Amino acid sequence: MITECGFGILCAMERLTVQVGSFEVNCSILSEGGRAWIVDPGQEAARLLALLAERSLKPEAILLTHAHFDHISAVARLQATFPDLPVLVHPKDIAVIAHPFNQYPPEYPPVPMPKNVRDLADLSSLGGLSDLEAIETPGHTPGGVCYYLPHFSSSPLLLSGDTLFAGSIGRTDLPGGSLSTLSESLKKLADLPSETVVVPGHGPETTIGEERRSNPFLR
Ligand SMILES: [Zn+2]
Ligand SMILES: [Zn+2]
Image 1: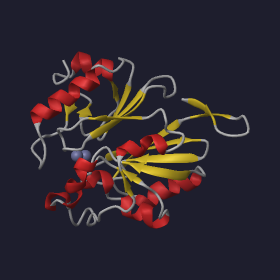
Image 2: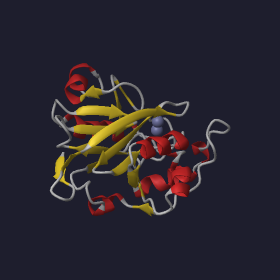
Image 3: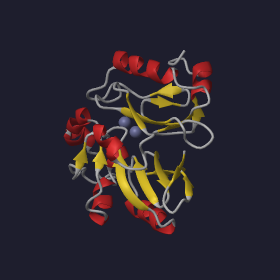
Image 4: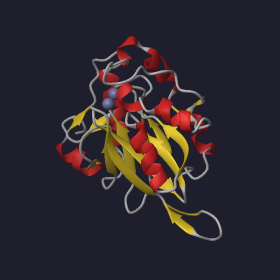
């Protein structure tokens, strides 16, 4: 996506994806014109803060695909550094945060309730991300979403959380999970353009076209 970001300068949105924590969650930092949006900061807050500082990026918001501990465990430390940083999460996943299952000591610290939690409906008020769409994809958790950027760089971009993986899908045997619900959610993703680059919550990147061809859950 190319937008004007001040003084007539055109800025392109960029993506940096790193694997964090022992569950190797793909945490993506989307940035444009010095502003950043952090998707699924699952662990390693110090490393994420260093990446932001190296690139002189100011975080505008944290976006969660869902509220499992492996995707949100760095939220508290990021908010300790940036106290006003809002956290966008589907309201149906708020109960997931406090669920006893959602604690995994000692590898992950206890997951406190994030501060400044905002509804996904507030996405449009986060300037610079007007192009980003939250596609509701429940099934792995009740409030799971995928973030879709139809005009990202040369191809559309989908951050699919634990809904869709390369060659597989998210598990549905955890509290609040449902295979029939997830199957309905996957139909929405199957309709996206073939060239859409998919960055799942774990594992390698893929495309919607490749998954339509090879993923038995998407055919
Ligand atoms: Zn998950
Ligand atoms: Zn996960």
